[in-house]
Length: 427
Length: 180
Image 1 (cartoon, rainbow over the protein chains, first blue to last red):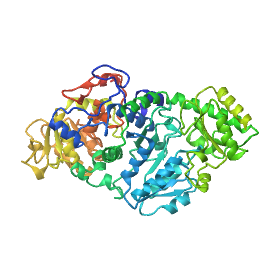
Image 2 (image 1 turned 90 degrees about the vertical axis):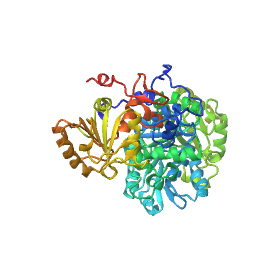
Image 3 (image 1 turned 60 degrees about the vertical axis):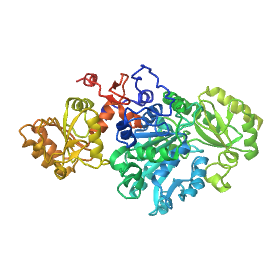
Image 4 (image 1 turned 30 degrees about the horizontal axis):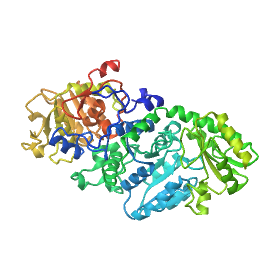
């Protein structure tokens, strides 16, 4: 019903939720239970055999979690979603669903440091191989693709530098080679940018960041765009071949355009186990209701702060695509016209030592390893999130020794700037 | 009827009004999509008559399989097609040859034949194509929400509870809510 599709703010509040039919509770209840009673043996068999909709066990699904899943699927314009314990769990399950030992995938080299570690080190234990590319260089991406390549992975708005990636251009390359494009949309959130509209086939989030928005609950989500044909090439047997654990059922054939989300749930989450707590699902649901308001305020504050920092004599550069003279500004205007997000980096003329003094002098900003909180946050990536990378990788990832990353909160902009001013005075 | 997008009220009214369903391409294998849909429709109280010439006279889920639509001894409200798009014209001809025609022709996901649909519609038969009645029932009742699927439905009304745990029905007021 594209003609009367509800608006984003309406979906952020209503999608997935209905009053509880027995109590009338209007907020989504926290279904803090491990298990769900079967009506009879036949009902149990139907649920276990994926023949009836419903709940079995909270490691696989839970009604509080389900509301969150539908909410995010609706906000991203996907067909279905799976919520899990963290963004890392979401990535683990996505790749478990599409990779076999010996396979590889192409990934942008500008990523959250934790993802660089997960892909580059942990995945090696499964004989899954990442091939790093510069996402601004389409030729390099194409050169890295071979017959064992199974996907291309990017961040829509890349951590930590806050640069937008040309999603459509990379989606075209992926689809030309019969591969899905997987996009981490954590930094932008669906309020600013919906990757599926630009050709992404799967979207992942760390909901710990802007979706929850209050820095109180971990969570990750996988959104199925419903766009990719998982059966065509035979490269994705988890979806296209009969599954012995489900009596020979073929998941893509059976579940159609939400088959990927179902496969992630019943082959990934069920067997690997990183379930989201119902309480966290409730907290994230409460957070996402105000996503449009918070995200706009984050963006407005960040632009004001970035503009101010750019004029400061102890600051050597500011990388924020919301600034009109930023090299990434044209892509930002194309993909995210409402704002450039909350997270950006800048360089201190005093280098590494100045960075340490600066971070330690801040009073409003919190020095910690997260982004997307209501509070303003600061970190020195080279000594924390990106510490395990080589110096070359640090620079390639936009996390060199002079770089400070800010995640601008939704406090009053004057107080955020005041704190930065006094800390810069101490440098 | 525009077969790219159906009004929700059109689908809802069909799912609430039909009682007897002939399923063409019914399977005895319990993991085939047709089998899963048949099981679900039976659980929702529909009277399903499997049709498959290769299985005629045998039983699927305790229901006798018929060789053709003409063999079914009761009035059929809806024909649900689990065959390829190219089989739809022949099925429409078979339907139009019946003395007692069904009210609805429904074809499953990926099954669509616009010429055949026009022919059936010209004879007064409602047509739904490239949809699954299980998914549509799940969307309209809300059951599909439990599995993280985007139902594309927003409602502040009480879900309709059916007998037993985790069983929802379709809300009768939907037609009025949608202004028709």
